[in-house]
Image 1: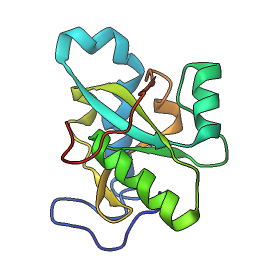
Image 2: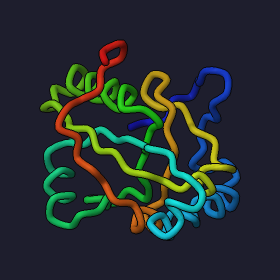
Image 3: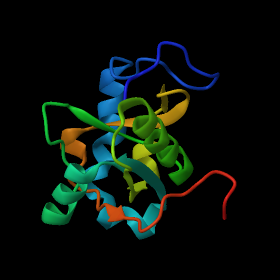
Amino acid sequence: MAIEQSSPAGFVPGAVGYQGARIMRAVSGFRSARATKEAEGVTSLYRAVGSAEIKSIQATGMLRNLGSAESKYLTNSGEAASSYDRQAVKAFCDEPYSTVQTNVPNSALRDLLPVSVDRGIPAYVIPNEHLIGLTPNIMNYSPLSGVP
């Protein structure tokens, strides 16, 4: 996913460099996702993933970068993840993606603002070291906007 230069109101463009220390503090709670799930509540985040990333998740049970990227983008709705899927298939002739869901402690998102990526998809930028405590669930369907 590429960060757009323009963004709708309410989203912060270029958040990779946006108050980096604040973002790092905000996501530090990801490591304790399992321990705090019941105590504070969680937010479901989603990601469109290709076949190589699905194989990695199946082999390791976790989200991790397969290349040199330093973070992953996760969005707040399955529909938004599916929107990325449709864009990538159309623009890059990629094979269809799968959608992965994970639960993130609300405290970890409290000070973290979503950025706008790939034509308006809201996304949280999660550094690699904070992916460790997240448990990805591979969905057996792709959510579509307006479809129950």
